[in-house]
Length: 273
Image (cartoon, rainbow, N blue to C red):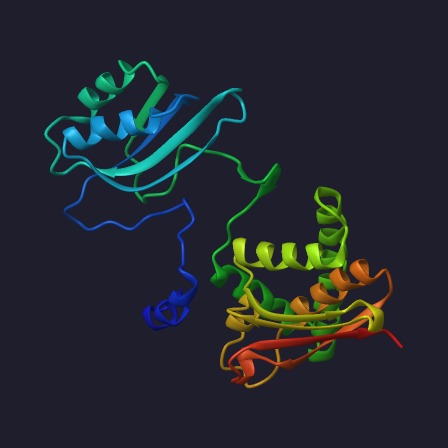
């Protein structure tokens, strides 16, 4: 579990919580609400006004297109109603009377406040999963116990290369295949999905060389206080990604690592000899 000190240290990047689970206090009464909205201006505002008039506290919410209902969208929220002036059933009735709403569902997740309204999770149009970093840690530790240190490094480096090449192929189909564009997309993607934040990059296509610096790399966090470089999957990923960008085989080494006590993880990608 990420500690408060770690959260403060990473606050420069403005952490966000995935809409999967929220915490509550013993005296709070938290429900989850899912509203199917028509695609009209002011729809969310009308829903929010009904809740505000009833003194309902909106703890967190998300808004996205409803895949199975063309032209409509879902607004889903965790709401706290311990001080509300109206009951949940009355709120549901009032919301259903709004002309911008097609469907309303309110329920109390129990025993834990997990999102109970949506499945599966989508990343773009691809199915995704959310795994707390502690699960990754236990998984990788068990694999490391089975393999020798060199075997572990080789397995995860090569797995990373394959993943990096695949992602580069996918992204190059979405936008221009120009190297700088794809490098920018990589920085966007790694931050958006929680792998880490690329804070510096230098790319020389003619030499097939790149240098990337990353903060908050998830792999280094898994191995914090290891006193050694630990980001084998990540450096493999950069090697595979850059191989696709340069259209030539390259290799990657990690010259600095947060797990070894450095402030950043630094990767150097060079043409394979």
